Length: 142
Image 1 (cartoon, one colour):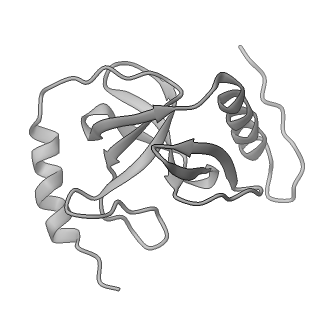
Image 2 (tube, one colour):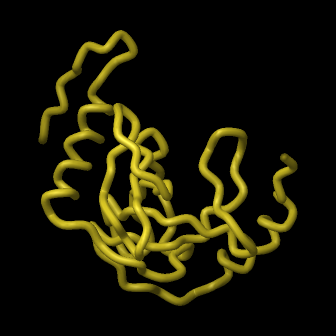
């Protein structure tokens, strides 16, 4: 399948020039302009390259860590089911954690419960603290 990098690049330039700020919080699920990405990275869909993303960590009004969602009920080492959001089953793709600009936010579609959110965070921490051979490394707080 041919990816539409040129069309995405045109939209990305408009998103970059947008100076408005959107208020968002951790635990919320937003449709964002995810874009056309390389190979197995998650892409957005449609004219605006949209994909739902769970806000994991808000650093400031401009930047956050987000986990892309998939519209199905998946479990496993790299997926965490987060429930029905906006009348659709959703799982986050833990292996696709990425830093995102708040300029990509389009509209909020819901939020996850605190229990689900903490469970997602635990699974992200487990994934990050695991080395290639499956041995855990220390994740000390300073």
